[in-house]
Image: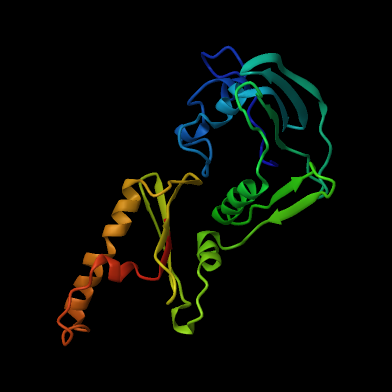
Length: 259
C-alpha cells in the first residue's frame, strides 16, 4: 500500500519495534486505539500475525519518513530484525514514497493446497474498493503464460456497491436511500435499493470485513423496517382501505441493502 508505512518505533514496554509487534503478536492491531487511524480493516487484530505464523517465509518492507526498512520472518519467528536499507525514491507526483509491502509464501506442511484463487481475490478486493471510496486497488496475476491485471476503483462507497448489485429494469425503483449516523466513536452507513425481480439481499460489514449473515446490527436492521413502516402506514392512512398489516417479508421483497 502507499499509506504512511507501518510504524517502526519501539512501543513502551515491548522492547521491539512496532512493526515486529504487529507482525508477531496477536491482537496488536491499531483498531483498538481509536486515535491511530479513522478507517481500519479486520475485527480482532490477528490477521497479519496469523499469516506470518502460517507462512514458510514473510518479507516486510516499510517506506516511512524517507527511509526504506526491511524485516524477515520464518514460520512466525523473526529471522532478520528491522534494518534501514537506504533512502526511498520519489513518486511520480514528486512526493517521497511511503507505504508497506508484505510478501509471503504459505507453509506447505500446513496447507495441502496453496494455489491462490484469482476469483476469490478479485471478489474480496472489489468489496474493499467499494467500501473505501477513492482507493485504487491493482490486482495482478503473473503465474500463467498470459499475465492478468485489473484495476479496482469506485467512487460512491457502499451506495455504488448497491448500484452494482441492483439490476433494476423498473425506472421508478431506481432511487436508493442512503443513511449515515455516528454515535460516540461508532459510525454507521446504510444504503437501501429496490428492484422488482430479485429476492432480498442484505450485506453487513464491520471494519471492512463481511459479517456473513450474523451480528446484532444485522438483526436490528432486519427487524426495524417492519414496525417503522407499519407505523407510517397507520398514521398516513395509505393502507386504510386495504385492512392489511405488512409483514417482514413484504418489507424485504426486492430489497438490496448494505450496512
